[in-house]
Amino acid sequence: MKLQLQITTRDVPHSEALETHIRQKVEKLETFYPKVMGCRVVVDVPHKHKHQGRTFNVRLDITVPGKELVVNHEAHEDVYVAVRDAFDAAKRQLEDYGRRQRGSIKAHTPVLHGKIVRLITEEGYGFIETPEGEELYFHRDNLAENNFEKLEEGSEVKFLEDIGGEGPQAKRVSAAKRHISEGEAEQE
Image (tube, rainbow, N blue to C red; front, side, top):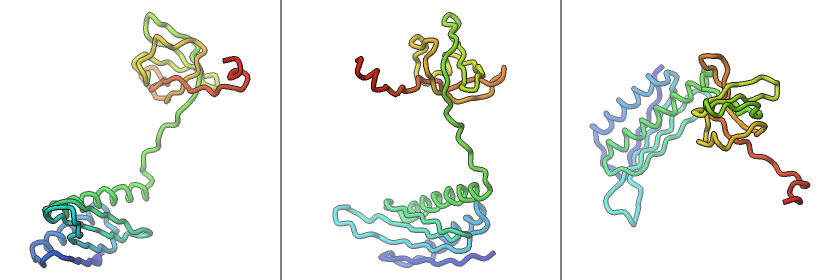
């Protein structure tokens, strides 16, 4: 599909070379997300009283099905570098948008809670019991903080579950923050 393109320059002298450069960058956007419907490019020099020299602002409004993506890059003294940076940011936004539409965004592993049921301190490993009663192995290298010596059986921990060579195991193990009940607070 041929996309609609509008290029506007403000306080920047008209340049065929710059316009050709922008057109090439816009054409390349379709390789990252083929359903781009339109692109509005504005290159200007904002008036900044305290800054010596000119910096260029490049704004892109990219129309895709169901959304308009906006990129606003300000801060380079070379107009071609400002254009490059803006289109690099647009590329990342288009790739992310495409991944979200395809449903291929990586899901984060949920943080689980359990308690330490056994520690083999000489060997540097232990086992965590989940609320479902499953025991997961963990090694001292799987601790979020390097505090294996401070762990005790019965301690509440939080962790991520992973599949290791021997099956499910716990990783990024750390002490769970306890909520102090009113009775415990009075005793302290």
